[in-house]
Image 1: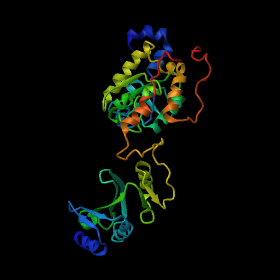
Image 2: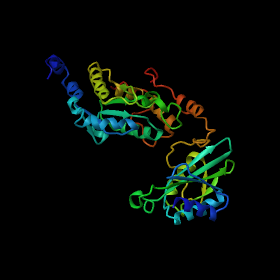
Image 3: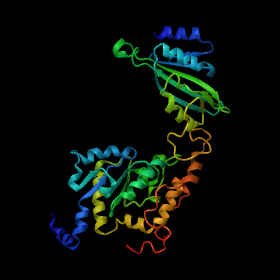
Length: 190
Length: 171
């Protein structure tokens, strides 16, 4: 353990423990997922950074969206994101989730992913190297320290707008709202 | 085999044109009425695998082109016979105003998803297909999206760019 961090551990032990044990949901989107198997296995070994892939969103708190998002995948992404435990962090990986990338004029690809779910950080590139994932993770640690990785809080506060955008893209959603939509007092509870 | 098949084809069917750019490839262009008979003929000749059915939109010629790519796993296998495997590309054109064709499921059952895909992306109707329901697409489009007159940029403007960013202020 780093001696410099002892004060941090004493101040907020839960946050520090949470920060060093990120559980990434193994969700494959587009071409970027090809970088993830070497990252989590022995070549780059993501467990050095405390990242381990898990099978179900209900055990995960890190969501890597690895590539272009078609309209159909967006539905699965929203459902997965809503099932994850708080605090949860979403990272867009590659240029396609940022602004469409090479699919900027495609008829069936979502252009800006942060219109539909909150994103805590982006990894630019097409494709980003596996090392970029670790750089992103260390940046995420800094953000968690400064309490700037607040995507799940923004999602709760602006759920009405996110839900509206999701309905604009997907039509009527077949699952109920995660947070109360009509209630004006939402967002005050957190 | 290659040459004799070509001769056989030209003897059996009128109005077909064959061309081969490489030894392992032969392109056959035929009228749309002949296609089912040609496919049956080729299947009997050993080409028992439809590896792809796709469509091309020739908007300047005002027609769609259907491409059937046939090959064989057993008889023309290069490991068995020592010859290069032959791919046959069977092309036919259908008018753009009346995008209809007969289904080939009776001959090659694996054409079913290909025909659904073409129906969805090009709007070509296959008569006799048991279930022409959407295969991949989630949304409804006025013009099928793979046609050349589908304006992708205008569509993106209307469908995706109109959705506003979520601002922290509008709660």
